[in-house]
Structure formats: C-alpha cells, structure tokens
Length: 249
Length: 315
Image (tube, rainbow over all chains, first blue to last red; front, side, top):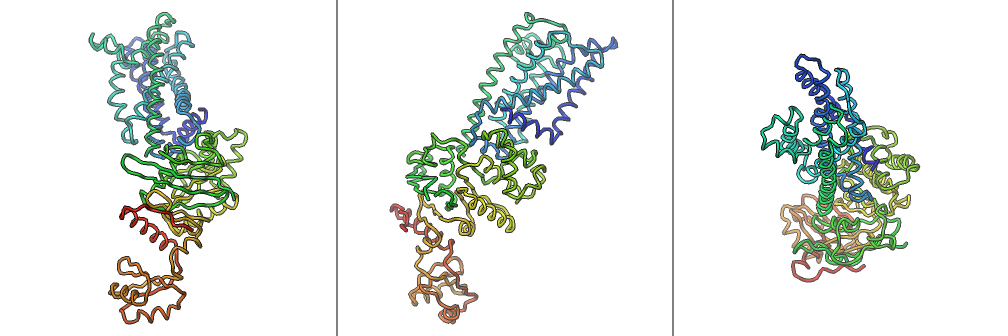
C-alpha cells in the first residue's frame, strides 16, 4: 500500500506538470470567486465561503477523481498491470495505496487553498477534526468513483477527460461549488440530494465557514460514509474485473 | 539435474478452440529452455497458466515440487514481451517499487536493486528516468525488474523483439550470464537463432503440444541430412526433378530449393550435380533450427490436417 502511494507521488514529482495544474486551477478559481462574491464589502466573508467549495469542487475533484483514472489508464498503457497482477499485492491494498497518495495531494491542496483564503481574511471556523474527516471521506469517495471509471470505461489517456467532463462537471454545478444550491429550481435541488459533491460542499462549508458542529452535518456525513464505502467496494470490484480481463487477454 | 518446472498433460480450450491438447515438458534447474511455436501455438496460454493468470482445464504444473496453488507468488519472475516499466520513475525507483510489491524485505531492497542494475549493466544509469533510456536499455531494465525478487524461475517472453542486432546480442550475453549465475529460464521467442544460441533444450510446439523436444544435437537428428544445399535457380521445378533423380529429399520456398544431402559433400561436387540448370546461386550449410522447426511444424500440421493425432517426435 505504502509502495503504491510512494510510487504515484514520486512519478508526479518527476513530471510535476499535473501538480502545477492541480495547484494553479483551484488558486485561480478561488481568487476569481472570492473576489466576485466580495461585492465591495471586504473579502473575509466571501473567502470564508468560497474556500471550502473551491477545495471540494475545483481542487479535490480534479486531482482525486481524474487522478486515479489517469493512474489506472497509465498502468494499462505501460503494461505494468501484468506485473502487478502477478505480484502478491491485493486489489484492496492497491486501492488504498491510491487513496493514500491522493490524500497527501489533498493535504497539499488544502494548505494552498486555505493559505490563499487566509491572506484575504478567510478563516476555518469549525472543528479541525471534523474538517479532516469530511476531507478524508471526500477523497475516498472521489477515488472510488475514479477507480470505477478508470477500470470500466477509460481505455486510453485520450478517454480520461470524457467521463470526468460528462458526469463530473454537472455534479459540480449541482453540488453548489460555484453558486449556492438554494439557487437551484426545487426539482434540481431535490435531485442533488443524491449528489456526493453536494454533501461534501454543504458539510465542509458548514464546518469551515460557520463553525457548525457534529449535529449540523450528521446527515451529510452519513451520506458520505455510505458513498465512500460504496466507492471502495465498487472501485475495488471494477479493478478486480479489469485484472481478470487483463489476465484473460 | 532435477526438474524445477514440470508441465504435465496440460489442456486448455477457449470456447471450441483447443489451444493446449496435452502439453508436456520439464525445465531442469539452472537450464535455459526454449519454447518455440508459431503465433497461436499456445505459448502465451502456457505461460499464463504457469503464472497462475489462467486456469488449465486439465493437467498439472509443479514448480520446485509444489503445485501452482501452493507456490508463493514470488517464485516466478516474468519479463513480458512489452516494456512494462514506469517511464517517469528512475531505474532504481522502478526496481525498488517492484521489490516492495513482491515483498522483498525492506532492508535488502536497495542492495538487491543495485545488484540487478549491475547484472544488466545499468548501474551508471540508476538515477536516470526510464523515459531517457534507449530501447536496448529498456529491455535490459525490463529483465532486471523480473529478477529483483530473485525468483526460482524467470520467464522471458520474446525478450529481444524489436531490438537492433547489437542490442540483441547484449541481451543474449545478459541471459547467458543469468544462466551462469544459476537462474532457470523459460524463454519464448520467434527468433530461431536466438533459441539456438541460448537454449540447452528446445521444445517446438504445434497443435497445442510439444511436437519435438531436445538439445540442438538431438533435434538435428530429426532431419536425415548431413548438410543442406540451398539452390536458387530460374527453374526450381528442374532442380527438384534433379534432386529426385539423385535420390535426395528436398523442400522449396519461392525459387529456393533446399536439398537434403545425406553425406557431407563438397560445394564443388554439389555444383556439378546442378551445373546445367541455370543455377543463380548455391550454398551448402549445416542443418539449422529453422529447417528443423519448419519440418516439425509441417509434419504436425499435416497430421492435424489429416485428422490424425499429433505425436511428439521421440528422441
């Protein structure tokens, strides 16, 4: 597990290009939306609210969802999957290794997003433990979904962006990343209750921007726990099926 | 020497296609065994079964006396035909990663990686990214990764495909050095001269089983010829007629007729036999693996075509 995580992080460090974009994109989005929502009344409150949404929607979404897809597609294209398949490494250990790698990346992105927000007066108001738990569940859920798409649908590097754009971006919009979800029509607001990004955003915004405690985010946490568990199961099973296909080829 | 790998009566079908129909061979400890066969002969299926990637319908595989189910995964090292390396890791990082997933003890990994790099002559490139290496270096590192956990059996699947002559010979030297160090190797290749140069014994697969097996000396005995005369002539038919008249067996491909000479004869004498037939070129050479391979696969194909059972040629 640790070997897989270290390998992914070392590869990213050697190439650095993905890391640059995973930092640049949320930085620009945070600055844009923080300044737009400031509305001439100082930036502290707008950055309080924008930072968690941008972290979930613009930072973690692109690193922790598309990242695992790229990792899996890369294994297939580089033919390294066969070597892994022959090794004693279990699919669960491989999955957890990817989760750990993207947790490290998520920690870096969190530091950058909140560092910038802090410079503009934004603050993290709630329980740090609760915030970390929400991020942990969010990363696991994203990696699970990424694993599923990477194992089932994306066959080459060119196909990575397809599922991310087609399915992921609408979830971001409906999830309240760029504007408050109460602006949605009632039927879309009802539909977005099944959207994990909505629960990630709502939970982190509540804790980070308003200092809400456990009782205010229990429903969101419950959804995220279930979704993360489903993500682990579905992602691991898809990966196992991909290995079976690979060994039969 | 005792058999490290024993493959007995292996059978495998995919749908209606019978790929392996009683494959039987053994690889002795410390030898290089070559498995030859045309595309679709079942070599890859055989390797996948040995590695545990595909389940056989019948038969048994034993490695070091253990069944596939009871052997440790790290007893086999595989070098796939494709370059399977992480291009954005350095050579040593690739080796350390695979040493780790193959459960090599943490305190021995660096030393093991360094030894593997030295074995393949890449110790000077240890900290270079794989993406910066040449094709030949990729192949050598590919072999090193298969060795990093010190497997009992190393399977090399077409290890030199796509390499230039110089790089191929470098890799041959590496494989020879592995044998000298006591590594047991199962090699599949399409390059017959490679099998001839490297392997102590060769198994030729046809119809899903071993059609012929043995050392080069034993395989040469399958063809009742001391030498081969290769005759290129404007009228190959006339050459064949002359060979028939002289009582020589012959085979032809295009305008080249290969005449089996039962005794070692001088080039001059052979030239005289065909002198009046507008011969463009004539050469005499010893019986090589190519001729043996063609003959074995031809007779196995004829048996299959004639609906008779293919039988291994006894040696």
